[in-house]
Length: 134
Image 1 (cartoon, rainbow, N blue to C red):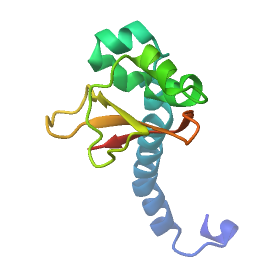
Image 2: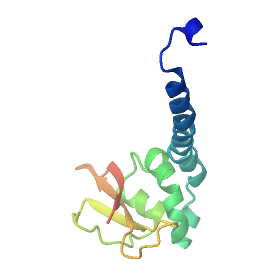
Image 3: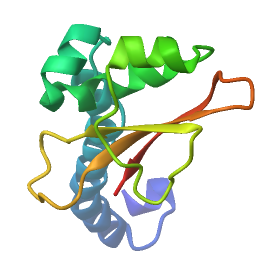
Image 4: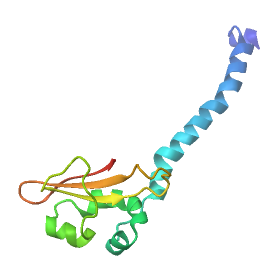
């Protein structure tokens, strides 16, 4: 086989390929699961009633909320949709900012939590929506 392929040290390359391919495929599978599949499975459409009543489900609604619901709304519309804010905005205290506590259901640390931070522009419309680990 060495004569036909012209590759020296074919046994070493075969051994390395046999050893490294399971590691490469496993890393690729884990990357796809955590990078693509997990966020899709963990997300859910925004529901105002569920947001207000069940704080543990908020974390799964953040993506839909940021991308589809809040952009362009004014402060009274946001308060009507999300209810009264229940969080102090950590280090971002401003009259143009509203924060909501967003506990991650899989987080076992009670001190770390996410906050949904909504920033309004000078015209009172939603300018930026972020979720930050506090």
